[in-house]
Amino acid sequence: MNLKVITIIIVVGVAVVAALVLSRVIFKNDFNLPQGGEVKKEIIMIQNNGSEVEKEIMVTDGVKHSVPLDSILGGGPPKDGIPSIDNPKFISVGEASKQLSDAEPGLALEMGNVSRFYPFQILVWHEIVNDTINGKRVLVTYCPLCLSGIVFDPVVEGERVEFGTSGKLWNSNLVMYDRKTDSLWSQILGEAIVGEKTGTHLAVLQSDQIRFGEWRKLHPTGEVLSRDTGTTRFYGQDPYGDYYTTPGTYFPVGKKDDRLSDKDFVLGIVINGKAKAYWPEAVKKVGEIEDSFEGKTIIAKYEKEIDAVRIFEKKTDGTLLRINPFGSFWFSWVAAHPDTELLK
Image (cartoon, rainbow, N blue to C red; front, side, top):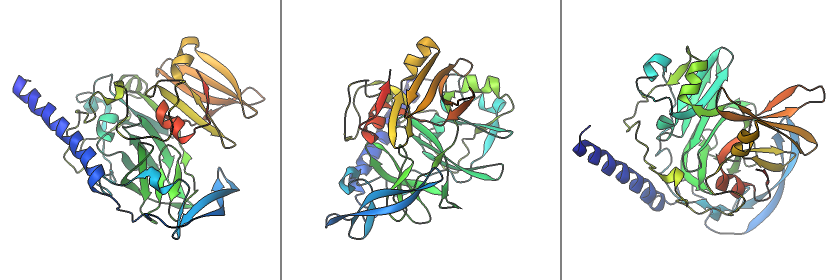
């Protein structure tokens, strides 16, 4: 690749980032959120992990919300300005190896006899994949601002729904919307934060943030998300550049916490409404850590074959039940859960 081509790629990348940032300023209010008015408190009953529980929410001008409306950044890209992938195509490991290096990060998902890998170099341009595996809908999400790749079961009150990008952020994190009610959902909470479904949670499905090289060795017949997405993007070029390794965030967050650096990666769990984060780097040093949290024995274990940490609950009979954590930068987790505990 000659110098001229490299220069063009860099210029285009910078222009894309500038356009993304500018559009967040220009597109103010795609979802017509109230800009003022009396805020009332209301108790609602919601389904959470199969149980019906009470939750206090706010209501402003008839709009339900669980976070202050002014904490949701107005603006874009506009609704669906970052296009979700709604009819994903997949290629073989052999084909993908021509496009991806072994160091390429992504989300690995396994359901039944199907193993799939979703490269971040594609997800960074789309953030949401509405997928189907063995007849079951799955919601694959990625927020590049928080390095958070999370897979959800897209069931809302018994009905499987499709999600899109709202163009909005809460604490610098992806805010999605469901295409049935237009409710807004926080990725890092896995919860609707504005609209009809406020307070409703999505179940998190098992996945791993790992590198392509580790994944392909374990799943040589697996499937990899194709670049044939129906849109033209610079796949392989990350528009966020060195954002992941430099201090600071592009957008404000509610709380900072210096127990870790902002962009240290953590695995967060919530039990009985209490939050705790586990720092994978600490776990890797010792291989395995046994912890007690909310009356449960938690095992954080480094899995060498995938070069990643997994979280388990250890039952009284010694069996390990996998817990599906929220993986993200520390700043994102602590902003969403200001009272979080931390194991480091």
